Length: 478
Ligand code: KG4
Ligand code: ZN
Image 1 (tube, rainbow, N blue to C red):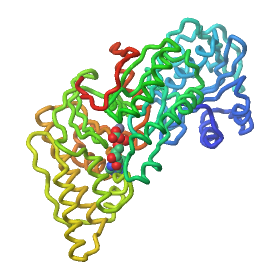
Image 2: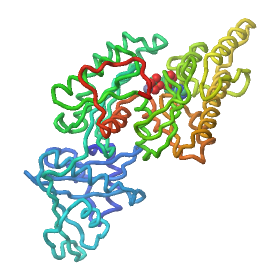
Image 3: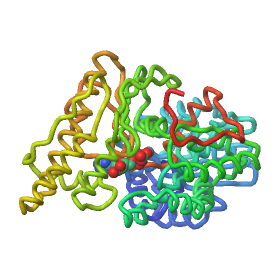
């Protein structure tokens, strides 16, 4: 994610600087870039907590100077330089700059190729510009009328997270803000819909404003507003819908109503491009589905749960074990210290469908039986056995489905995709496939996933009108 330089990343930037330039900037130089945000801006690209590249712009009236771009040595030739340059061009043109200027060593062929590829033209040669006697080219790029990647602002409020994110067509993330109500609902052992809606109302304006502020953009820079239209808690959905519709109406932007599960699926594009046909194993608090995806607009559910969703089963089983809500992460943790001890039945369902209520009832019966016998339940072992049975049923059905529906890639999606054992089993069983697991921070609900999916609606011109109804239940096929 490309953001303005913050002090916490300074050490990493200095390390890249020292390995990239003969006359590196000092810490003081960088600190003044942080302090002096009106005249100059230094952007960093942070991937998994590591700075992979940075680029610096100085603004001078209608012009700007690209003073430097650097990529971490082990990340070179992977497109990060291009990504940063594109970002800086976008930023400069959205700030109204007419020209971008830079100097480059005439012998630096790689950099010259990069700049020429983006339309920079050499306007003069500066003789012996560098200390070693090398010449420099002065290059200029006209920014007026430059095509900018379209940007989408997306809102998610389908359950107990209020979130807003801004992304562009090239998957540059400008901001992603999430606030969770989980601590409040945990007191009640589950999400209380009325409390959820009220808390969304309290949070939504702050979250949207924060996302715009962190992106250093205004609503004028946004090309479309997206929101989760369903499925989810109806009161919660309405809060996000109302906010999105108000923005779309006031700023005259097209409106996109995103299916929540498509968000969970398309967030995987943050890892790498998806190839079709693709199979998605969707595992969340409300859904367990095997979805065959022919192309980015065509979805077919080939298997679904006949009763509880997998996340719901985790939450209910944790409650039976008198553990905290949400149960998924708790069982994940407990099972790590457990071993096989309790005999639980494997769900038997035809085709690619799932069922977890029999397994949940078996856990209940086990707890009752042990309590009646005066035995202490071993929650680690019970979590282990529940999890092994539940997850293996997911894996087996997925395997079977892939035999009938050969796919180019397989993605895991939804809150339960955060489960460490499921991730392990997916890797063990599908190592021969193009398997994509979502980054942990994007498994549970967030708005970046809605923004990623919204780009596909935008591409297909699928918009909704201001009177579109939110839907508590809604098929991914529609
Ligand atoms: O996708 P999500 O955030 O909300 C829905 O769209 O439903 O999923 C929430 C579900 C909850 O049931 C939660 O217990 C489960 O995801 N979950 C997990 C883990 N982290 C969250 N389940 C198993 N293991 C985890 N580590
Ligand atoms: Zn979700």
